[in-house]
Image (cartoon, rainbow, N blue to C red; front, side, top):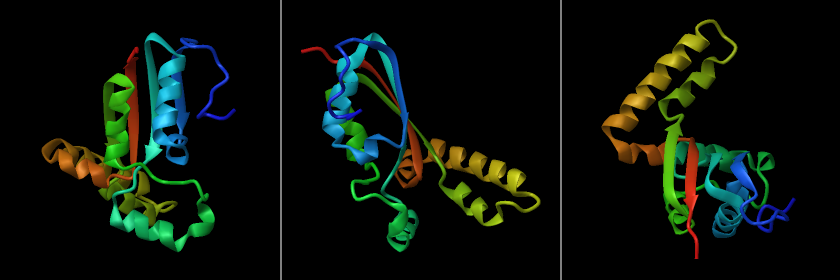
Amino acid sequence: MDAEHLAFPDASFDLVCGTSIIHHLDVDRAYGEVARVLKPGGIAVFLEALGHNPAINGYRRLTPALRTEDEHPLRMKDISAARAHFTMVQSEHFALLSLAAMAANGRTGFTRLSARLQRVDRAIFAAFPPARRWSWMAVLKLAGPRTS
């Protein structure tokens, strides 16, 4: 279904969730439709790619065949834009230094290395919140659809 023009009645769902959807859409339209179909007190949760990290953006430029034409990883302004549609906007960020563990994927010690680097990521994000913009992924939690 076209996520920018959902065919559901207003206030249809307690929960709307998706993985890697919003960064393929017109952000404002998508947020508007999600807010429209959420029931009062409903929550929306999305896992989305972010677009600030220069290393990840370099990889994206080197692998265009892995992308779609409509893909535009979210920027912090796209997350902030949700405030026009929701009274609560939260984001939790993942994969900064822990991306380096991918070089060891499939090898002995990968799981342990990945877990350690994820702990380092969480510590960096807690100590220096502006670093969240350089994460690869974010979970967005949106609630309290604004009513006209």
